[in-house]
Structures are given as structure tokens and as C-alpha cells.
Length: 155
Image 1 (cartoon, helix red, strand yellow):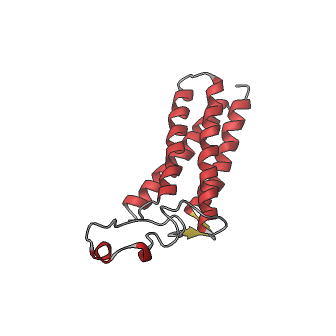
Image 2 (cartoon, helix red, strand yellow):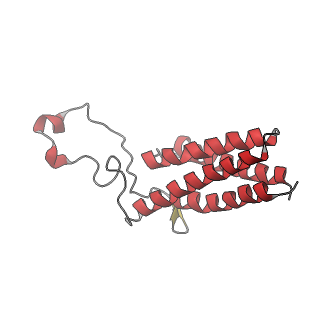
């Protein structure tokens, strides 16, 4: 495959993952957690980098695309590990959420308490035993292969 084809495939892969995430959120009603949102930004960067490369940017920029999918894939691995309880996640979105024992009576009766908090350590969707974060990590490994092949391609 040519460099341009490989970059196009990598860019379209990140776009598909980002569109899928928005689909799950807006059409499927599955609000993202903090780690889910963190995984989106590097995909957006990879898309922008891919478009710039496709319009003739220097070949060295391809390595930035590889870095972007590596970052989002690493966040996906971390997030999947949090979901499977292999390691702790951010305290702001794991465990029981708010520590009810630390709240006063007026805090418990307050109507201004945060609502809609999505926990990072709960799997809301999975396919073949992998959550969305796990699939993000797996697919990012494939996208990384495309980026690296593009960087090494002669044409």
C-alpha cells in the first residue's frame, strides 16, 4: 500500500472510533465517563494530523499520528484495567462515587448535588468480553501499525 492509503486508513479508523463514541453517547444514551472523554482527544488529533498529511505535510508528521493513537490506546488499556479492577482509577470517577459517610444531613437532602456522574470503573457495554475501552486499545494497535507502515513507506 502507498503511504497516502495507509494514512487515509489510519485517519478513517480514528474517525470511525470517534463517530462510534458519539453514536453510543447521543443515539445510545450512554454518557461517557472522564476516561472515555480523555480517549477522544488523541483520536481528534490523529484525524487532524491525518488530514494535514494527506494534503502534503512533511513525512515526519506521520509519527505524530502514531503518537496520538498510541496515547489513546494507552488510555484505553488503563481504562480497561480500571474497569476490570486491576488497578485503581481516578478517585473522581471510580468506586462508590461520593463518600456518603462523609456527607452531612443537609448535604444528603440537598438538591444541588451532582447528578449523572458516570463511573469509570463500571462497564456499560461490552462485546466478546471487551469493553469499549478495551476495543479502543485493540483497534488503536491496528491503527498504530498503519501509521508506522505509512512512516516507513517509500511512496
